[in-house]
Length: 203
Image (cartoon, rainbow, N blue to C red; front, side):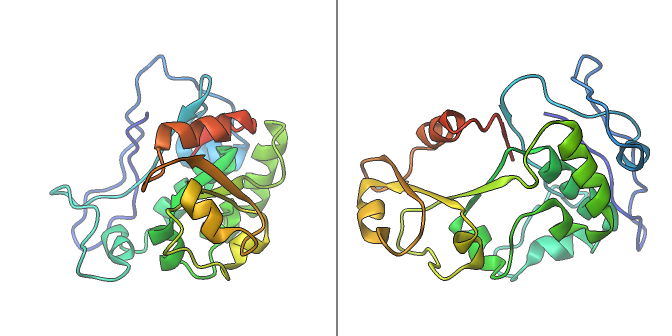
């Protein structure tokens, strides 16, 4: 994956850096507003799983004892929100766990949800790529901690769980897939399910 620079300089922070990417990385065309922000093209060569996170200069990405510490680490950076919007716009499906879901009780994981100002550019990118209006959402869970009333489930998010979890959730959420037996969801098998549904680019 790409090593991405970015972030708004505050309180002595390091200024944003251009993306640090291998020269042979796929570079799909982006709509003008996104290309200006990203300083070039961005794309993926074939099926892939990709992620984005911010970190402090000393490598910290979260503080377990502090709720929503990711927002503190990111320092509210619009650049980071814009970049996440682009990555969501490129995705066929956004894959998350129940912890992420519970931390965002109203989250829909749409590109414009994280950066509303980019809504038109994100929509243009998805149309340019021949993708649906929004990426699908999939949640990995053993079942016990899933908030079955979360609005993203009513909008059609797929729940990827174990055989026991599927039995527990049957009738409680619209779309449940039993990925494997056992206590934990096998992520390789979960990705196989997503691929079978035509999702090549998994965020």
